[in-house]
Image (cartoon, rainbow, N blue to C red; front, side, top):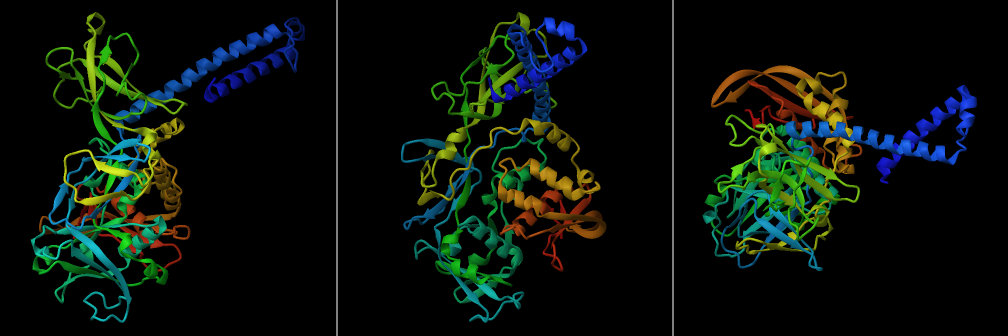
Length: 593
């Protein structure tokens, strides 16, 4: 008897015993003949009978309670398919270029890598974005405090520190001007809190950025440095178009936080004028703590880092649909047993006849009708033994299945290795599964994360209501917008991470103001109606990452901008005067001038 069902049995047994006690008080004569007293049941046969009835009632109540979560989960999976999907393991892959690298090598998004430990256990991961491996390396990172040896550039008159990255080609014969370098991504490495403190510094305290080479410096401006991870095309997980962008962003931020630890430097044409094989990227900052300056080195920066997620595609074993079963199990690979787990169903094909027919998901059709009246619905169940079972429920809208012959279906699926992937150490060997030339040493920056395969079904009712009643007015129009926003964020802290909890609890106030401001769209200036949102954060318990969380709030609220409208987010810190961060006006995810 499972622990879950045991509680139902005990609840029903307690109820029957209480009823028996009340019966003995009201009808002592009849109770005495049955061997029932106020405090006990003396007749062992009556006691066994009561326990049997409690067992049957417990099973019935358990089944009734299971049917309601099944309804809410079905609605959530149809309306908000991203929420109930299992979240696979992920890691960050770092490329350190070999000394003989002399050309650009491209690694497309979706490239599969095999991560294997010393015992031979392995799991398949894939990249989530395109990576251009340039023959570059960070030779040195130095820190200097004012006064500097050189004159301060425009905009950096109040800078008190300078972080200088010396970047060079792997071969002295390589001309930087001949390399296709319009942009560089700089990922921050190292201990979590150190990387977050460095992120806060670079995100909020930079006054000017310069590119120096051949004795000349080009001012790029602080706007040349932009955060990474917040654009729609940078998501780690695949999402359906129906998923709201703000919810996708919350999933990415709270579950894959390390992928946001970096910046994109727009170099433009600055390197085209450089002759030679090396240049320096100078970052002038307003403040820099001594302990951060002492620890800073080239080991805390990486030019080529990409997220890896434990997902790959495969075709399931054929499934015979005879229309007599409530659910048909999806067998991903009979030889591997329960090693593989289903992440998503990409396509279902009926291969009974010579010409395969695609079977749509129930309520999944758009405007064109399907060639078949059959439909499917995915059902996933997490057993107490830790195994995730997946199956298809089948419906026939044409009502001819009772007289038809069995059909054979195959499922094109995206699968994961489940919890097995998280057992691989950070020192695991990484090998590309595709025929690509990678002139670099590959190393994981973190141990693969623990997957989140089941979410608390008791929260699904609240999650459904929250998602259905989620819009701009549902948050900012309530009596307590702070608590409403924190509750929504908490729904997406699937791993119950302490760092995420600190972020959420740091929100202490939200204010809004309706404003009219000039914006520039398609080269023309016009006035638009928008909302200015001021969020107050308490940084007391946040040991680094307050600027990163501020960027999340900015991009999250941007998804609420209506047609011909905008949002503008300001961040204040509790107990401090002035603004901590002021973000530009946004319509959707686009900046407005």
